[in-house]
Length: 579
Image (tube, rainbow, N blue to C red; front, side, top):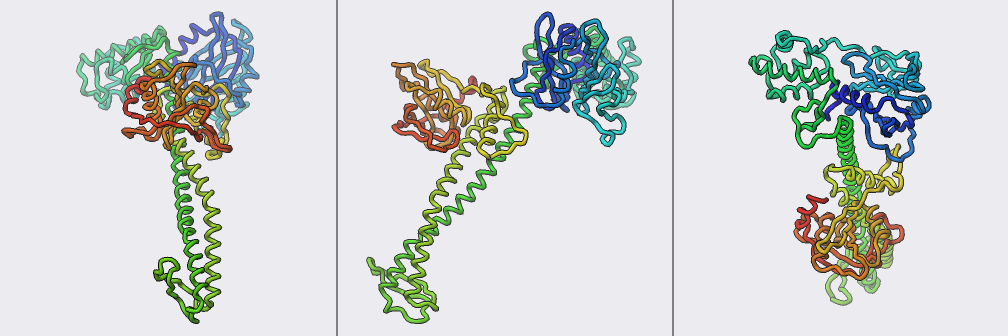
C-alpha cells in the first residue's frame, strides 16, 4: 500500500484550505479504531473530513458520510465534547517539510484558536493529538508512555512537543544543477536511494515517479547517468518543487497506485486530490480487510468440517458395529434351540442354521453354560440395538451440520477476490451469520444495522425477466421467504450446496425454455459444482419451498420440483461482465 508522503499531504492541504476553510464543525464520528470523521459546514455545503492514523494508510481527506452505526469510541467522544460547534479556521504546517498539521479551532473565523488538533502523518508512528491553547495534551488517539518511548512520550496533561526534527538538507528551487548533482552522486549507489538520502521530503514512490518521468529505469545507479539524463531528472526535480511552492498539483492514477504530480498517468484522472485519496485508501483497506476476513472464515470452515468429518466417521463405525445386533440375536436363538449339543468347557460351538442348514460358528465363554452364553448374546443384541437407535439421530444431525457449513463454504467460494465494496459486505454478512450460529466468537463484534445488507446478484434473462441470486445464506432466506411471490420460480442445484435463485415472473406471463435454461446455468454457476460440465438444477414454485423448524439459515426442503441440467461454463462470459 502506498503511504501518504509529504508531497501528497501538502497537495491535500492546499485543496482543503481552498475549499473547506473556514468551516463549522457540526459532528464528530469515529469510523474505526484508526479513523475519525469531522462533519464540516461551509457556505458552499457540507462534507466529512477523514483523519486517519492507520499505520499503513494514515491520511487526511474529504470522504463519504460514515455508516449509521453507534459510535462507542472514547477518543471521538472527547473530541466531540471539546470541539462541537466551533469553527475550523486554519490547517497549518507546524514546521517546514514536516508531515505534521495543526488544525486550529476557534469560536469564529478571525479569533484566536482555542484548540489545536495535531495530525501526524508518519506511517506506523502516526497520531492525532488534541491540545488546548496552552499546548497541553487533552487527549490523543494513541497515548505513548515513558516506558514505550523515552524520547517522546505522549500522555494526557503533558506539553505537546513536535516529533524529532529531520536532519537531511531541505530541497530548494534555487539550488543549481551542479550542486544538486554533486550531492546526489557523491556516493555511487542506486539513484532512488541516493535521492532519498540526500534530501528530506522524498518517498520511494516519489523518487521512482521522478525517475520514470525522466525516462530512467528504477534500477539505475548514480554513476551510470550521462549529462543529458542528469538534466532531464533535474527538470523533473524542479517541477516537483514548483508544484509544492505554487500549490498546483495533478492527481492521477498510476500502474502501482497514484501520483499528485501527473507522473505515470493511466486511465481517467480523479476529479481532485480528495477524491483520489478517499478512493485509493478505501479500496486498499477494503481489500486488506477482505483478504483477512476470507482467510479467517475459510480456516474456520475447514477446521469445523474436518472435525465433523471425523465425528461422522466415528458414528458410522459405531453404526456398522450395531449392525451385528441381529447376528447376536440369531446366534442366541440358535444356541437356545440346541442346548443338548453344548458341552462344559467349550469355547466354540458349530450349529446348523435354521433356514439354510449352513454351519454357524458361535464363540462361547467356557466358564458359562449354554443358557448363560445365550443370555450374554441377547444382552449384546439389546445393547447394539439401543446404540443404533441413539446413533441414527446423531448421524442425521452431523450430516445436516456438514450440509449447512458446505453451503456457507459454497457462498464463500463465490467471492474469491475483492472487486467492489459489496464483496466485503458479503463476507461481513457471512461472518455475522457464523457468529449468530455460534461457530465464531468475536469479542468486539457489533451486529449490522437493518438496511445495510448487500443487494442480490441481478441479471436479465433472454426473455427480459429479472433473475435474483442470493450471495449468502441470509440472503437466500430473504430471497425465498420474503421477496418471492406465487408467480415466481425458485431454483437450486439438486443436493449440491449453492445459492437460491429466483426468476421473477409478472402475473400471467410464462418463462420459455431459453429463460429456464439461462436461469439453470446461472444457478449452477453459483454452486459448489461451478467447475462441472453439467449440474442438475431443480425448480419449483416458492410456495412449495419450506424451512424446517429449527433449520439453519439457507437450509430448506421442497417438493413438486422439476429438473434441468445447468451448464455453468455458459454463464462465465456473462458473469465476467456483470457478476
